[in-house]
Length: 112
Length: 111
Image (cartoon, rainbow over all chains, first blue to last red; front, top):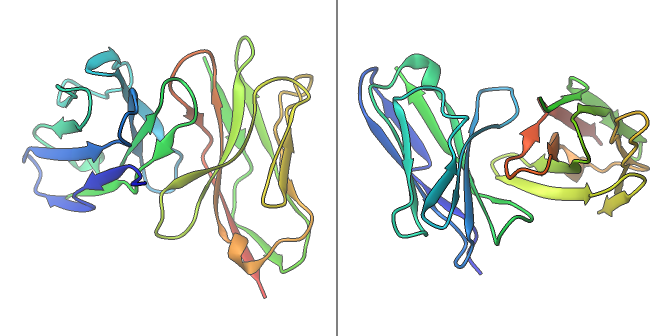
């Protein structure tokens, strides 16, 4: 079956632009996670959904970051007024409930 | 809070050499421990896991034992192959939902 997919795979934005990153989880997976991976570092947690409910957003670095999952399936991570420090790979993961997380290939965001 | 520390790379080995990548953690309670692998151009994949003290996770010839007394989960393989070249991440999940990752260790295996 299909794994977690993310789009776009690469995104270049000018500083100040808004971007939207999409995650399609494995069908039927209840839990969905977003992580941010800076170059040469490990992923860091951003936010977590259980179905459509955002249960934890403690990792979002600022109020410019916003995530949603309105129908409990596809999720979008939006970054407003992008800054250079937002450059990173954004990873999405899903799990059936609270078990093994399956990761997507990531979206590499470069802010110029 | 929770944290994971793993040895910095890159680790460069010859084929068939023995591999150890050290990982230690800080956490309250009883976290589950994981090793993830990221092959070039691919996403993170779960390599192995252990959910309680003294458990040994194993997969594809890799092993790691959950040592609560030393708060460690070192990754080992007896004979590495060129195809094992990748970045390896140690991680924990402590009664929550998110994973806490170490910084990653790049392994390069030369023929």
